[in-house]
Image (cartoon, rainbow, N blue to C red; front, top):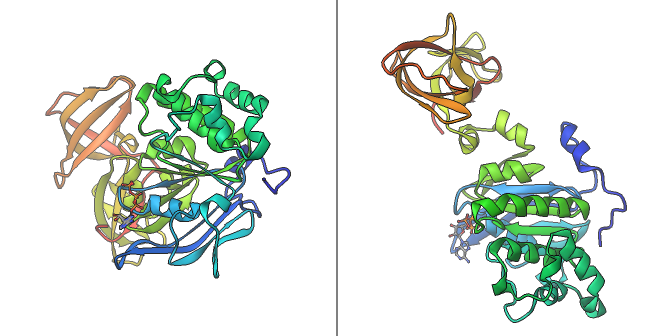
Length: 367
Ligand SMILES: Nc1ncnc2c1ncn2[C@@H]1O[C@H](COP(=O)(O)OP(=O)(O)OP(=O)(O)O)[C@@H](O)[C@H]1O
């Protein structure tokens, strides 16, 4: 059971910068796991507050699932600690098996029992007499719009319906923490939004803390109150979606969320001087090399000033236009995304500028 009687309102936490509640539901500390001498997860630590969703985001093989499996107790950490609702699950000699952890799990393949009808599948998560609690099962089914499906078998349901059943089956025992591994990735694009929204509503209502693995940055931004970006087994950055998008720790994190235009330069007078202009470079040594990353929507046509650029290709994408250009000094290829219909002729010369405050400056000239 959730030991916190009245968890803080998730919306106010999202709005308030750096409002980390004092009592996390999940605490992960310095988790490490090696396979055949190779580190799959190294020194990963983060916390999740009650009612909050943290998305583990990263490329294939970066250690997301292994981290999730260690939280679940399916995988034993080599070192580090996991605490749920303040109780040690693993670490310091303790190790609770998965069935003794107050955790619900949902995976990519819905894994419903094919020989049980929907009501029995949901009831399976309940223990003892609660398993027959028709009212609770009916309430959960109604909550995800499946009231009329209680007597159906999994093969009679669509993928989206099956995943909603898997979700309420995991939530039925009222876990403190929900662990979800790519839970929506096998769903048809059209179904996905509806199932995601149903899941978010239900998780918020039940004030369940959630760790969700995804490799899709848009999904992480859509679902996560916080995002933890992993790379090569390590946690690179953890924070609110806007922090990761606007203040990424490095170029790799920045590149996860969109295409980037990159220009390099040297720091002089506290600013990195580039072909696109000079940008503040706080904390970087005078004379050192730095690179500036600019998202395509932040590289915009300039009336006067700016940097001359030759248009290579311009396409209208509906909501916006994508203009591919080559900077005249240096010849670097860049992309600019502009709202509406803006189609300069290929070969024409335009001027572009970086929107104030949008440039991301990193040390060095490569990852
Ligand atoms: N049981 C295992 N035995 C050996 N190596 C493993 C095992 N489980 C995971 N690995 C390795 O550990 C690394 C991390 O794997 P993990 O499944 O955690 O990555 P991931 O980020 O979840 O990837 P994906 O998005 O492809 O599922 C990979 O190199 C993987 O091959």
